[in-house]
Length: 193
View (cartoon, rainbow, N blue to C red):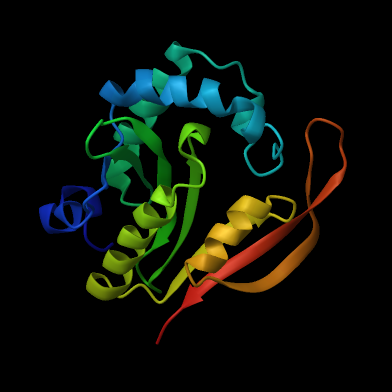
């Protein structure tokens, strides 16, 4: 089944640099997560096929339930979500999650979204790079995937600057729940070994 990443202090302590730090999402983060969602909602709602939760009613209560759900599922060792915070101000920069962790073949999916208040500052890139370094160097993950809406140019550029390779585009893979149009899904990967 692998190592419980969220309990490994060596892993967690590696997720910090001069500007940011990451910690496992908990219920105490709910207020800040909710505020970041509200501030960023117009941007996030451009991509409802890959971020369908943005169409749900946004409330502090729903955000608390999400945080509880993440905490409840940590022991299953399949998903872990991190909060990214600014080191000096502790403001929430965004979330990054590791999903569908498959220890047997050393693969996982990474997903992320950022608070638009921190756009174009390079902080999301730093956070994801910290996480990728630990996953590749210390845990030797052989395949890391990111699934991105083809029209989400900011997320695609971020993947490319992090040295993900565009493996392929899954045409008409998703439907936009707003207008039922088809969306193409970009599969970005980092493959090692």
